[in-house]
Length: 328
Image (cartoon, rainbow, N blue to C red):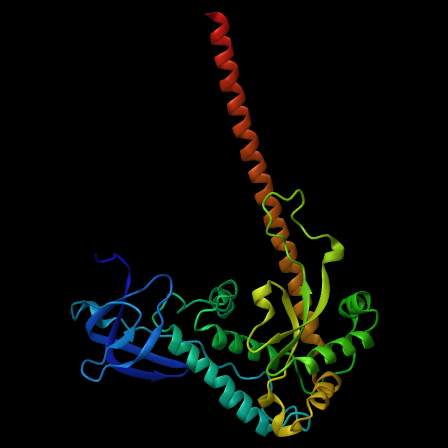
């Protein structure tokens, strides 16, 4: 039985462009399999059709002229590639950003081209493909693209030092002192076994409990936390707001520091961190948390009103039955 699903038109032409490829097919229409459609192999040498997780059906030449693209782009760092020297060399940037980061972008574009993910925002792709821990194929590349964009923007020339204002106040409140925070962050980064990341996050989750009397976190639950994550995993999947990160994959520091990860971490904190960026992210995280609480409160009120209305209707119906019975 043929399913009535939407389709993506492809041709035998591969059109390279920045960040991915465009595909067209003059012979077949490829139905999407479920919410996502992923490439499962290469090109058939006879008819140049992608092998994918679905069956093919014929389409007319006119119908198959749609150009399908995945156009996530490699964002440049917000400074020149030698701007962080001598703490992070141009050579490191040429490999780390120019090769590793670029590969994540290119691979992600190939994975999502023509799927339901194509055209979605990067954060949405990360959350959707994390799939509550049962990750889908594009997750690692999507998360690594996001992580690296965030990492570059966490640094600046002449960075480091100590933050000020509300950020410093919250750090001192939640960690005891700025020095204790630095110690905890360094420990998280140094003890992440193998590849991964360390994070400073703002935690302000709205509890997903529909029947809770108060589904909102108390003020003491809204706090800064230090976390570490393996491989590509990032705080988006826990619904935390990331404020700062350090990349502890070996390719991020090996050219400059060899196996001295603790030295790299110390230099990052003392010379590279952009506290201006972290403060700006904190403001956005708090605004986002407030907006979500207001939305949740509005939903709660609407549900209460709907429930109250249902009760009034039922009471009127019961009273009517009682009056009729007494009249008889």
